[in-house]
Image (cartoon, rainbow, N blue to C red; front, side):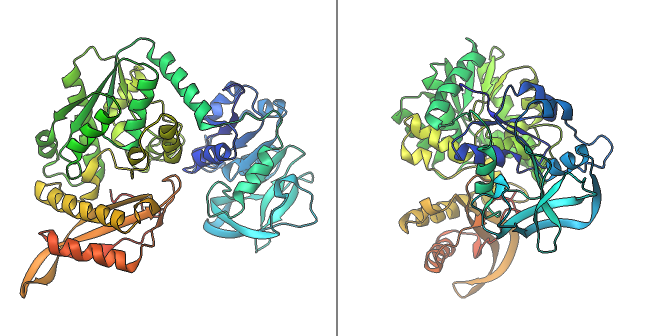
Length: 508
């Protein structure tokens, strides 16, 4: 990029990368930095201090070089933890709240106030809170620029260039959060512009620089992430050996479809059938984290068994949600779940400089846009996400061939049904998950005792938050009837109406 990016300082919030994403949506280039990297941000137009899970009152709480920050001479916005930290730096205090405030609240501003953050915003709007502590003892020079319905300050201005907000403008639940971010960002001078077509050129250059003539092995699955990664490596003219591992945890007919797909756009792949190895390794295992670790480690072992010891780089289609949910964007973040490409072996390879992850700053929608720029077919770019550990995360409890067969058959009916009813492109992700509970039913006038099955379909922009998809009843009824009639071993179909948070998109 031709100018230094807008700097978002990561204090560990699970929403932090959303700030980066929102700024890119506004058309400006932004990147994430750790607090210790403040002096490596160059000359950013503005700086944003993110939220975080810690308390500023804790011993060893994440801190910032405040003198350096002031010396940068640019607008600064503190969000949640960032605001509390700024309040301390400007001479105020922070105290434990009476209770944790998580969820919607009101942002009430004075329409006569000329604060640039609120230009064009409504006098009252919904915001999203996620904090325990609260600011207290404001200094005489600190101005309260917004309050909630209880009169508690939720936005402060410390001087002409320093602002703090107690809520998260980056999440969709803050109804006017994006205009607020836009107002703040545009206080900066010489803003760096962002577009996915020019970002493609940046990524191609980054890949060539990181590869530097080394041999690359790329894992492909036919999903959006690995397909875009393979196409990017192809675009960068990197000498790549593309390997598809059939883990036995794939959807129906997936191996054959993946081969045909890559043949269609001129990328050669090798297929390794390791299904028996994976099912044997998972036998008797029920803990979700243990299953993920087993799959991740075995996947890497199979890769390196296949290609030998001379492989210098392993390319992965890791996206930022994978990074942040595994708490590897920095030691401040909290782990939500361990992703298959974040197991110990991978992290060891990363420490040795042997992992290439050029998509690790991007969200799914940005990867789709990149795929369009790279010329991938729509059926690839618009494909629903599929987890790296495959159907194992849709099979709570022990993973067996019997259970996988049920999931495959039901999942195909569900996805085919969404296509038939014109609903596939209306949802972010849809799948069938087996519930490891048997229920009483009646089939053919006889009592049966078979599994219950859950259908899940969600809408989302970035996979960090998700709403359950409100599919028409007739669509769900048609799909349920087909599953009950055609899939042996199932006598009950449920529809999952959980949001993320608190539920994750996948079951495990």
